[in-house]
Amino acid sequence: MVTAPARDPHAPTALLSVEHVSKRFGGVVAVHDCSLRVQSGTITGLIGPNGAGKTTLFNMIAGVYRPDTGRIWYAGVRLDGLSPSQIARRHIARTFQIARVLKRLTVLENLLVVPQQQAGERLRSAWFQPRRVAAQERAHRTRAEDILQRVQLATLRHAYAEHLSGGQKKLLELARVMMSDATLILLDEPGAGVNPTLMRELVQHLRQLQATGRTFLLIEHNMALVQELCNPVIVMSQGCTLMEGTPQEVRDDPRVIEAYLGT
Ligand SMILES: Nc1ncnc2c1ncn2[C@@H]1O[C@H](COP(=O)(O)OP(=O)(O)O)[C@@H](O)[C@H]1O
Ligand SMILES: [Mg+2]
Image 1 (cartoon, rainbow, N blue to C red):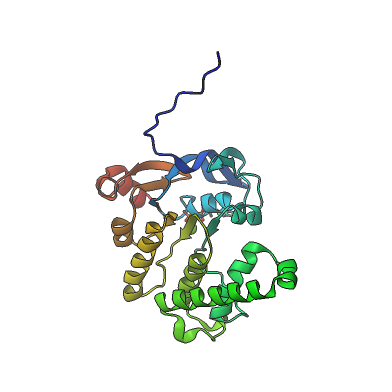
Image 2 (cartoon, rainbow, N blue to C red; image 1 turned 45 degrees about the vertical axis):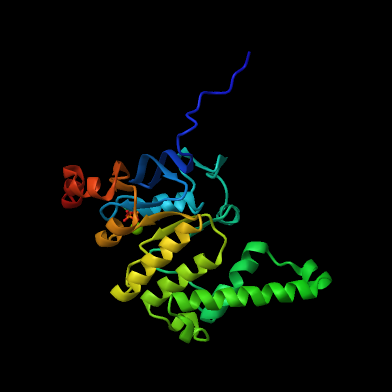
């Protein structure tokens, strides 16, 4: 008789599972035999000294780089080998260490194109169901305006994105993620260049998004932000994971301090 493999029914299911992934650039081993899991509904922190391989890992999850070895699973589906757009269509969104926005569009337009990009150009429905499309567009606009209020970019809604400061671009990038229907959100240093007041707001937004069922993997250097927001925290050093624990466990672990001092 064939039986199903044993499973702990109480074990939390990992939304994202990175298994023994490696990536080298010429002679540089950026990520080496790295494994980690992100549980559904968490804000999982990813910290580690500069050059630890965090951004490279993000790029592999997002499909920018193909891992040299290993596998990446998302909700039971293999991600490695898929293109960035195929991965985005699976409801995974990411932001960049240096924010990337659509410079020649206004702040508001940057948000309004998100649903279109997700759906592809729905020309046929625009032709056959113009009223429905118009209603949908109004709904998107209301939602975009609401999000811009929340990240305090509403007064800049008609400014071209290229004129924003670095911190404002980071907020706009986050707003674009909020506008998407992503389930897993990869944030690369969302707090970088964002002033302390807006940082407080950022924490609130992320918590709200978490409450609506989104899951985050968050690279951040601001330890106060990590301590407040993330659980668990995964520490990367020299291309692989060093440890995982609560923010307190990570903060108090001598190996983590050593990893930071070593660079
Ligand atoms: N495209 C690339 N070409 C060559 N080396 C790279 C590239 N991307 C990253 N690296 C190298 O890989 C290592 C890890 O970098 P990165 O993933 O950016 O680390 P982190 O984000 O943790 O600071 C570094 O030594 C970096 O110089
Ligand atoms: Mg980085």
